[in-house]
Amino acid sequence: MRLVLVCALVACGGTHSGGGGGGGDAGEPAGDGPAVGACPVFPANFIFNTRIDSLPMDNGTSGYISTIGGSVKVHLDLGTETDQQQDDYYGIPSNVVTGNSFAWPQVSYSSTDPGLDWDPLDESDCGTSQKGVVSPCPGTPAPLPMPAMPLVESGVQTDQSNYGDHHVLLVDSDNCRLWELYHVYSDGSGGWDIFGSASWDLRSTALRPMTWTSSDAAGFPIYPLLLRADEASSGHIDHALRFTIPSASIRTSYVWPARHQTDNGTASASLPPMGQLFRLKAGYQIPSGFHTQSVAILTAMQQYGLYIADGGSAMFVQGEPSAAWADETFSEVQSVTADNFEAVDITAIMSRSGFDVNTGAVPP
Image 1: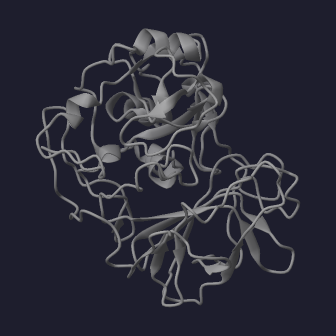
Image 2: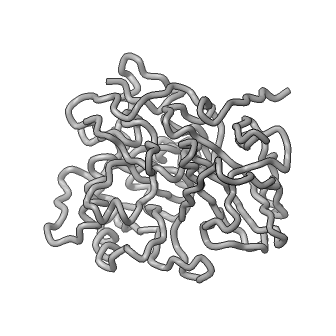
């Protein structure tokens, strides 16, 4: 028997906190945290919104960087094309919806891809007829706050043999709730087939249940860790980022705040675990002539770090497609090699009084 949890949109989640909580040691200022309209993108004391530049280096750094390849260069996994029907539509877009203003369509949890041989409902969240949240999803089809014409990673596809992650990220600004869908394809008649969905209360520090995946192998939300052009252009990115390395280079275990692992690697201690936090070394001097966007990105990598969130190409850092990305940003950021990074010892936070492995909250 599966445990089914049902909650209203405004009440689902674990520990709740306002926008100003949680400070910490020097190097971990509380700040206000990123936001979408009136909604926080998690509370200010959430680990993704916490500076980590004062934490110790992880002793496994040398082995991890050797596994990744020290000469591998950072790659910005995003682009300037905004027409999702074009072949060079690169990046993971997002959709801001007003969930109370329209009827949520029924979405089918199914795929014709033979490689997807597990039950997508077991670790999915879906909606209810009253626009609540049910977890795990009890059956298919199920309602989700899907707009009629969403932006989809890699563009809208109907042919499921054209395999890809095809994420859809939905920020419900009415309810401050994030929905992230995986393997999203049009069914050709106005409906949608997906193969997994996960939801977070953006006002809560609650993580996914232990061992649960999301639309990301680490069980992370994608949206809070994406590079966004408006933030980079402002000169300030006050949150961590996400990146990938090949699945075979990821240890068959995970570390907080990750919730899930892949099993393509080995248990070798020279492989970083899923969810491992890295940062650009403090000794890396960001060139003064770099573009504002480049300086903001590299500063965020030093101050907030970046997490292994999924298997993929080595040192690929994900962001949104936007015409606002400057040409210089690509050449400048992509000149940085992996040997300029180090792993971060996150246990320095996990050992603090009040730490709860089931939340992303950083104790003071």
